[in-house]
Image 1: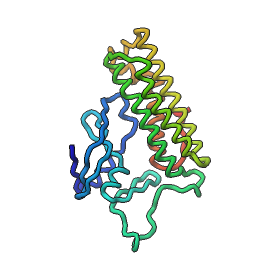
Image 2 (image 1 turned 30 degrees about the horizontal axis):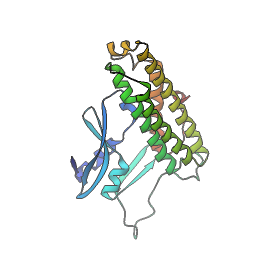
Image 3 (image 1 turned 180 degrees about the vertical axis):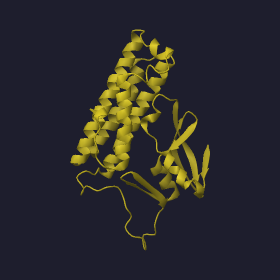
Image 4 (image 1 turned 30 degrees about the vertical axis):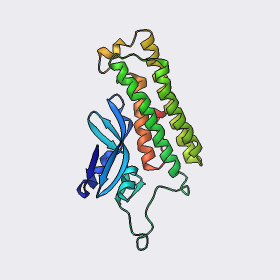
Length: 232
C-alpha cells in the first residue's frame, strides 16, 4: 500500500508518535511505501485498531526534512540550506548532565517498542481466550531483551545509565506480568480476563507497567533524564 502525504498534513504528523499506550489493543506492523511531497520511501507502519502510526524519523528521512527533539517540543520541517542556515537545534548533548545521548534515545525508544510488541499480543491473546505457551512468549521476551542490551551498549554517560536503570525496571515488570499471565493460562485461571474487559487493565501490575512505559516514552522523546515512581 502507498501513502501520499501533502504539505498541509505537516502539522498533523506530530500525532504519529507511537507510545506504549497502545498496549491491550489490536496491533499489526509491516513495511509500506510512503510518498511525501513527491519523495518515495519505505517505512514501518504500525496499525492500531485501524489507525496508522509511522516513526517521525522515518518520515523526515523520506521527505528530506529535519527533526529535532527539545524539552516538551518536537520540531519537524524542511531541512535548512547548510550554506545559509544557522546551526540547527538538535537533541541535547552530553554537556548537560541531565541530557540523554542521541544514540541512547534511539536505542531506548526501540527497547520500549519491543516491550510493547511483547505485551500487546500477549494481552490480546489472554483477553480473547487464545492459547498461550512459554515458547511463544519467549520469542517476544528475547527480542525485548536484545533491544535492552543494545540500549545498555549505547549508555555512555550518567544520564544514559540512569535512564537504563528505569528501562531495566520496566523490562522486569513486563517479564513479571508476562510470567503471571502464562502461569494463569497454564492453571486455567485466566478466564477472569476474558470475562471482564477491565480485569487485565485494572490489575495493579498492569497499571504500573503501562504507567512506566508511557513515562519512559515521554522522557526519551524529550531527551532529558527524569524519574517517576511507576518505574521503581
